[in-house]
Image (cartoon, rainbow, N blue to C red; front, side):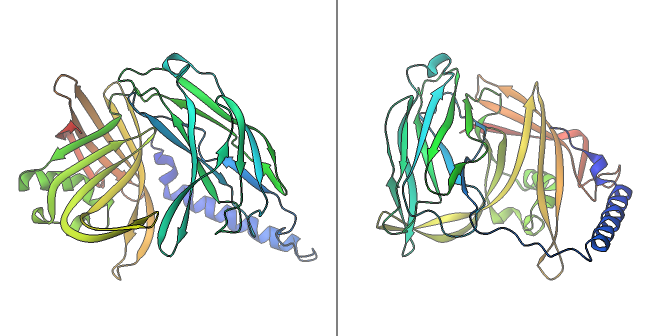
Length: 349
């Protein structure tokens, strides 16, 4: 995952814009005598796809949810049943004899309450999933999750592949991708880490790095946070979560049961990441807010960092060196720059 500064070159953007403008002009000129074309909205098949081609979790994970969804579509979803033949193959390590489909579920929202319902399926490593129309929706669900049972061992190793093989249903086909590969997350920083900021100096140093990446960042003061900062590393994405002192009332309703509780507000900064041999790179995007409080632009950013793992004490030291975005990447104009790095110690949660 390498940050491409060339894509931020203003001259490149200008030439690209000029080229596209010229191309559009030529296209318009050539199309003067052409009949207008409209997108095809009838007799276009619905496509069921695997939401992601690969994923993973920590070795001790006991289950994993894989989403199957309809790709972008127009019109009303099918009102008759759909069946999918599936297969689980290429099981390696501890996955052999352990991985099966535990259940297949989808959600329906009725009167501001979410209800979880199950789909029928047969078989263990091979079988058929039946997607029946929901009585309240009147159609099949827009998406559903396959919940795989995993070994759940602290030292789990291995992988497996899930594939949708064949589909039967009116005006529905299998789209791409149809295959998903699961592997155990074995990189050093995988999982959840927590930092406890206990001084204003530490808070100021932390916000030097992260304030430019969130609209509320520059407005925060030390007393506005609880001090808890969480770094959550998943398969290839992660997020920093800053817990705020301000609380808000959160109302949830699941399967007819309503619950109201107070919870701290949070600021989240989401990125993709690459961690290897002590080097850590982040890539994401952040909004640029105008004087009127509205979003003016969205900019890609990159963050250069490093990590040092202490497995004995279950802690990791993250050191941050540079943060740049599309408008602030040249030497001297970085959003954040410190050649020696600013370091914080996070503990395994």
